[in-house]
Image (cartoon, rainbow, N blue to C red):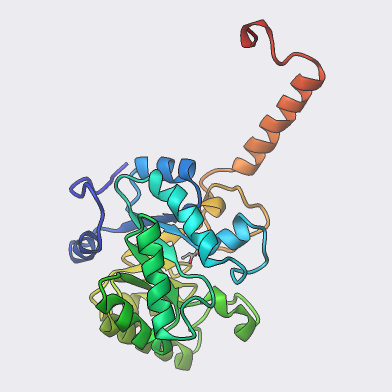
Length: 271
Ligand code: KIV
């Protein structure tokens, strides 16, 4: 396993250096202390408390319902499990779009009440002024372009974005505008690999891809997907590194059997 051991704590500067040195950035989501601790100890560079918590933890169809208080609650738990990774938190839907002061206040709340080092928010050009304000006050912001799940009701599907020239040019333009606005890194979700490559080569900040091909500076996946905990979400960009759903189901069935047959607890498991 290779981790970038030269960094005892991953910061925005460290991520920038990794891009400059052509070292790929590994990132995963986490929503609780135990998982965050395992992922951090394994050597991950960046942990995102994603608003995907709405889907995989809360059981919602979209990322829209999760609240700022809930994101802060999960982040406090995750932060306690992390020693090395950079911790980034998604700003939930409707906590940064309506006005810049509210966005700044909410981003500030996240950093003040958790141990996160940065926030992430979705959107291109329309978010530039807000990002400029938040970063101007010393709060690092990660951008998120391409497929932006908080806009699901505008697009009506989770299909890949930037598949035609006009949309691809718009996404590339957004990337450049966000860099100019001050984001320290950019998540690029579900766009053609060639577009992600073009963006990665056109900007000086790290790109972190999800469903965006191999040419980004780093990759991120939702932990539940890559561990095979979620069984009903199978897009082609998810590589499953385990099948935890089956392992858990089989362990729980064995436990039920042992309880029903009175073979658990045995003598050595009793006092
Ligand atoms: O919410 C999330 O998990 C994300 C990642 C998919 C990048 O935004």
